[in-house]
Length: 346
Image 1 (cartoon, helix red, strand yellow):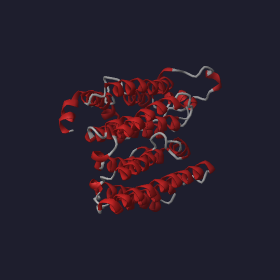
Image 2 (tube, one colour; image 1 turned 90 degrees about the horizontal axis):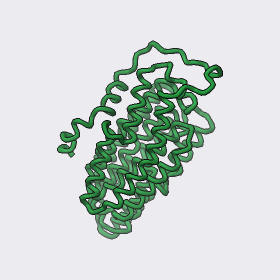
Image 3 (cartoon, one colour; image 1 turned 180 degrees about the horizontal axis):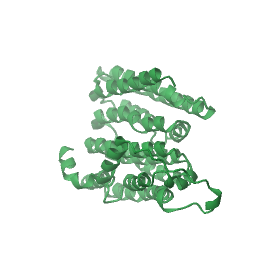
Image 4 (cartoon, one colour; image 1 turned 60 degrees about the horizontal axis):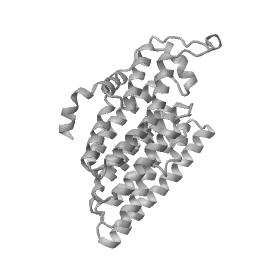
């Protein structure tokens, strides 16, 4: 793709995100979402592969349907209350329609079917944008309307997302699909707490985005898309592969690493809200996700392929790892000791 065109699309993405998260009026928020959708489509379909075109088409159809629902929800609210302010979403029907629209935008169960397919058809760099920056505007809208959302509906969506995200990721061999189901599972954790402590949702999102960015950038550096090629990629940059192992375990939420922090705080908050059964259930369901993270981690560093002679060993590259990956990896692994400071900010 032409570098100038690429730059325009990236700037449009940032512009759309900024407009949505800084707007008070529903029409401005909707405009930002539309700019985002239109800017990411060429980045998804830039390879001109049939799968990429299919992914772009699926993305366009689901996002336009979700945007129409956002507009419909805000118009219904304005009809009943005379308010176009985002924080004044008080009508129950409007908040129900908005929850469905945002769930569709994010890829929460039962509106999750498009996300793994779109991620699988996109290049790794576009997949990184889809998993991180494209999730920020819908989450910002949920944050601004969190006081009027239905807790029962969101808890149901969250538990279903964590269950299906873990369960459907178990037998995948394509790494992008595994990361898509991982995203659906993490969104479940964010949705369950949004009504009770919206700042915790934002903290969870920031840490999730940081860890996912690390994994996507690492995979892009070692040029790996499937589990079978991940097994032989350790010879390229062994130190980076060792760090990928720790980042995957952090994304799984294992205790000494950064990823444990949001899970710990969310379980604590749910228990305070007398929702111990929901906390127990969502914790048990996250064990499903842990299984496929461990599978990825196992393939990353521990195993050699069974038939070593049939596999071409990758040449070890001498190029240094980028500073961005080094910083992100360090933060993805080592932020747990400063959790009291993070907690006071939140």
